[in-house]
Image (cartoon, rainbow, N blue to C red; front, side, top):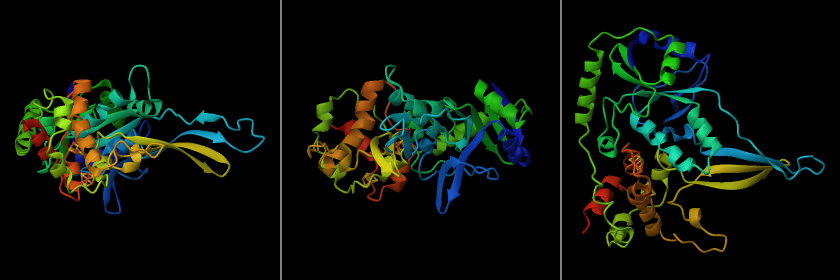
Length: 346
Ligand code: SF4
Ligand code: SF4
């Protein structure tokens, strides 16, 4: 592992050099919304360390995606035959991703690669990325990432960790992919000897600034039925509007729906984000809906994140503590409070 020093005055020129080998992805403003997307050739990523409204999950799992197409015109040799639209994405450098968001995306293969079944759309997109993270030096009050197995300086899901040091970035190059990106950008100047200690000091300060935490150690030992039938759900979910904002913003929510759309003589098999908070998500063709009420749907969201996921994968809960759902819920529902209730219930 190497630590480089990157003067801010040479940052944009380095990004431009790397555009020859990578498509650049980063956070950028669209009207009043900050989100992650591909950057235009003359555009640079926002490096202010702000929490984007939507997480970067769309980089590997787009909100709407064509999976297959099928010709419908009579006489077409491929009429009524679905053809995959799977494409191998070119290399992409995702610049300035928060370490906890990268951690969330590193969990995605758990869901999209079961060993027997692989989702090539998500897995290829994920593989094409080089993750250039930006350490979070000023965490928000809603950030509880350190109690979710990650944190503001978590290197584990990243290829490079950038640390803001005033007039420069310190860049911890962690993997071979990270080395290739740094070379491509022409960032080669090694930092001084004390750089590692400086990063450690900044990391400790950022972690100390996170004053919010959750405990989920006792959820695992409780049975599903104990948690499912608990009497707090009515109160916990009372204010929920089932708007789905929490799940769309969340970097670890991956529910989707597949539907066929016909347009100008072609049929498109689309995958679109969906949410366990909407009633149509579980509506059967027969009309029966196993999660008909808002209480059932809200309970599902928290049971999945805090109980089912930890039981199934042994990798902790399905939450990295980014705080988006807390910031954006119009009803003030706070996953930290729900977790506390579930963890402490008798
Ligand atoms: S918990 Fe909040 S954000 Fe999520 S669906 Fe309910 S009201 Fe909307
Ligand atoms: S559940 Fe909330 S805090 Fe946890 S990862 Fe999702 S949006 Fe972030």
